[in-house]
Image (cartoon, rainbow, N blue to C red; front, side, top):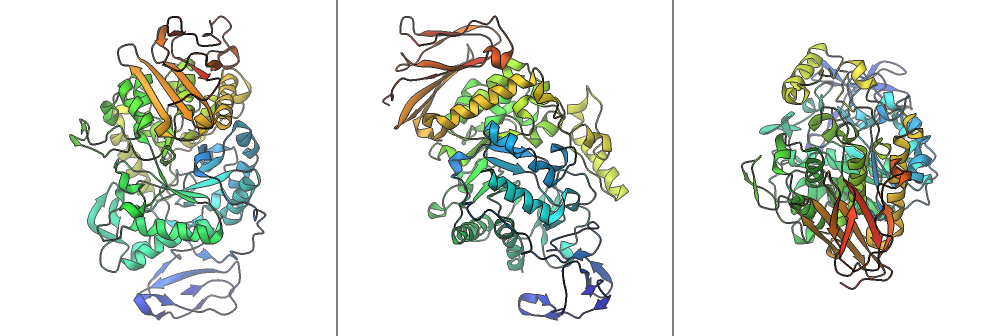
Length: 590
């Protein structure tokens, strides 16, 4: 190993147990920079570097991991049921694009009702602009965002405001530039292939150290950065056919460490397997992850509102799909998928609602499935209000993508800034081929172009003017109602019912709680006004929120539904693409 500060000296390393090499360097202090020499002729950064100040090919820097003075000793985390997640990209959320710049927006998020800030990956990647899924140094917060201390300042500030922090981590591949991990050991295998190349070697020869590398990373974020939850990217691309799956081993270690720290902490999977084994308890043969993203909810609602049937969206489009996503979870629960041309999934009817993170938009669905266009650019304001209402009143964990709360007009594109020009060209051309069908009617945004990154930034002048102001007011009101109403916040799928009409395109969601009034959400998913049946037991319920109210829509000539539900004809009239929430005057027996 070579240390370049304060003097360039080479220290030999000693092979120990499990082929682990070590060296002890006296007098090394924070600020020292070093490289490892492999086979005497390859100088490489430390794969567990805490800081890469000069990029992915340059020396690693020593920092003092205990130097930061935390002020969150009081913070013990939040119950998972209370998570209202706000996904953001550090580089485009603010003009400065840093961890510290986010701090100025935390009170805004808290006042809306957000309870958990979700950060897209922050591990060091090549260049300065990237989504983060091309991380090459999984232990090193990206220097362009502010590095380790600024990330700790952000987490500490979030906890001060009562906000949990969810960090997106990538354990299924590493980025293409600066990835020297394979030179240190058998970290990759060609036995399995992923969309990004060779898979991580979680189950082959000498995989013990590989498993430890990634499990230690999860524990590192939990312990050293006080992160409250990790979102595990694309776990369907993690291959392990050993007796104890890496996800199970990771979950056990993570939850054990959280318990030792006296904190509530969670693991949230991104998975397209529709397999409850991912989120089931280890006691019944599951991997023990706490929750997962629910793509089925997004696809079901998105296709109804936009009519899009591209790619995997072709499997959706029925009101019945949305009903099942709300009351059960997986829409594809073993039934045949035309897109996959096979049966797909298992039933999630018995899994609690808190195990499903639902969303109308996220980084992938905007940039990939919608060519960078947000829902606000695809449908009208009424449909957006309707979508937000369904999202907040389903029995799951809602997630917003940055700017969605005020119907931001800025696009969100895929962007990179690889210094390797050949790689940059290959990425740009490859993405153009992969998504050319989505960009036929518009210019293709080159991922390497600084302009692609710049136009993806949030415009923070929008929340102060119409129509964004009205959408923000609705978002705030919906989250407040959800938080204050037990039947809306309890994540009880077992106390949720939904009725619908495929032909008339309406949906009625009933939520209940043993200790609070039942809620009835009437949704007109049609472009014309219509009358919707009132379910048994809703008579006498009072109107609490109507999405076409002037304060939410800016409209002044819309007829409101009745203030109290009667029982005369058993119908309620709603304008096109609108929703109304009623609360019972007393608990409604089930």
